[in-house]
Amino acid sequence: MKVRLLDIAHARSGDKGDTANVGLIALRPEWYAVLDRHVTRDAVSKHFDGQITGDVVRFELPNLHALNFLLHGALDGGGTLSLKTDAQGKVYSTALLRLIVDVPDAEAVDLGLPAAP
Image (tube, rainbow, N blue to C red):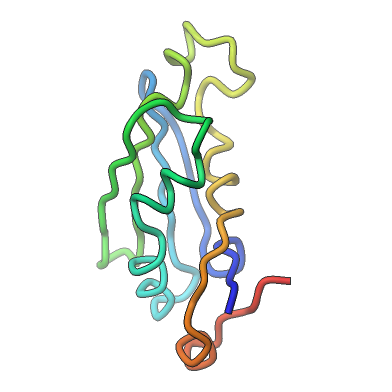
């Protein structure tokens, strides 16, 4: 089943220099396992292909039912150097929530995950 992160998580983002920071938090504790398994470093890197020039680093925070990502090279030098519209990285959280993951049907049904429209 295709599942939008927008339907199972919320996110916050910010910046430090040329790196955007995105926190992804499961809306229900039982949905954290889906984030942990399917929102990998590689999946996030592929999702932001062409938008960031550096590496993606992932941190797990299971006690908070959350993942945190550092997107290096995301801000074209940072707020004081960049000509990007969003040089502080605020929209990266919204952009990450547009990611769609493919969850096995049985797991999705057991967890009550909403299917992507």
